[in-house]
Length: 255
Length: 306
Image 1 (cartoon, helix red, strand yellow):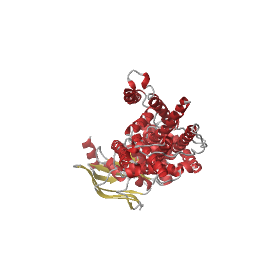
Image 2: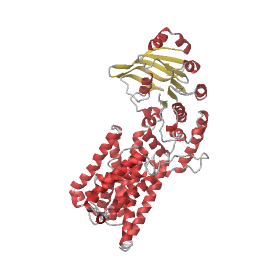
Image 3: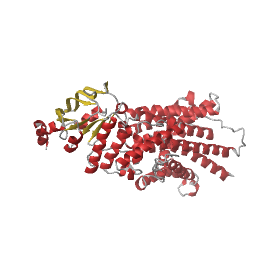
Image 4: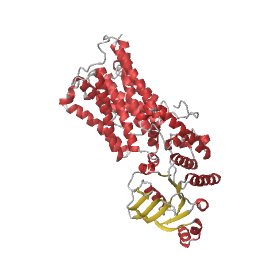
């Protein structure tokens, strides 16, 4: 039995009279890749927003590595090792691709004015190490040619890749990916899936992924949760889920 | 000789306003903090330094450092509401903050002499120079300050700290999702900007040797905004260039009252109108200002990173 990375108990979130999350309980185990699927408007992104601290929950508890994290600010949750990407990829428009990568680096010096002014040699050596890692990653993500391009000039898919790159720079223990492959070309999508699998195997990272492509889900996920109208509808291996009557019903009704 | 004296006065004022514009640019152009109360820093720096020296008999250097420190503290205080106010509402709060500081200076007569102002403010090293050469020395002092501020702020904006600030400016939620404490970063930026503008205040007070609340009306903030809009945000050289352009216009038109058909009263009112039109034209046709924000390019060898 693997240790639990993320435990969600009876999570509830209302927007006015709409119950976006209805007593959702689930568990993401250490060293695994978990999928989260469901029809549009079923609460997937809301779940991510609540877990990552961007929305306040109404009821329930969230534990990360055994520690309670609901109520913490988003930046503190990230510093504990849980990070997320956004469904519509965000990128500071007047920072270049390389600056975006450097921005996310986990170990940085010179992030406050004092060290930026008076510890410059140490700042430079950290920057140099981060720059090497950033170059490797943008090579892998096929963004190397765009390294000095403003993020504002990237396509939606390229911004998605960039947000993955930033996450890898940040080096967290659990990564919530909100539709990481939407807008990314199929060849590169397969490439990305390999990278994610590789990271999980080699560095024992855990992933929690919202994804619409069943192909991606069945390729990489150990386990899948299905949300519908804010409730957990089913959980199981990708094969089990694909044969679940209720799940098929939910998707067909939505369509 | 009068012409050369005027030129020195002119350059000195440009220098002081360059420092103010760089400070405002650091907030607006780099961090995305819309501060409409920039003159408060200027006022606090000027009054603190003058009063410490005139009333408390402190050495000039203590006055300058005190002015910077108190102005930085005000930056800390005014940044607290950024936690709960959205950018535009915070901007209005800063406008009010600037007026509060001026009204305190006007009404706390026991401390600030009220509308009479603080007179006979001592000047640094005045015993060393003759009356004729002193303005030139002071100009050099100002130039040294402008250069120091320019390099210090450039170091900051090119550092990881500056990268964080720019990211907050463009996409604050993303910064949170990367674990940045954006509140602390904004606070640090405001303290730095406050100290810089406070230095400008002290330089101003000890230059003209007489200050009153009249010097710190909201119109001063407007002038500083005109400087960064014309010069270009997100670029320290742009702020300096903007200060040159606006001051050139602002000061020179004071002296052409006798040469235009409508008299000097009308001219002084028209001056603000023209600056307003200039701002509108720039926002419409050259929103990035005279000098664009520079793209940071990393040296891939890793050495000598700018």
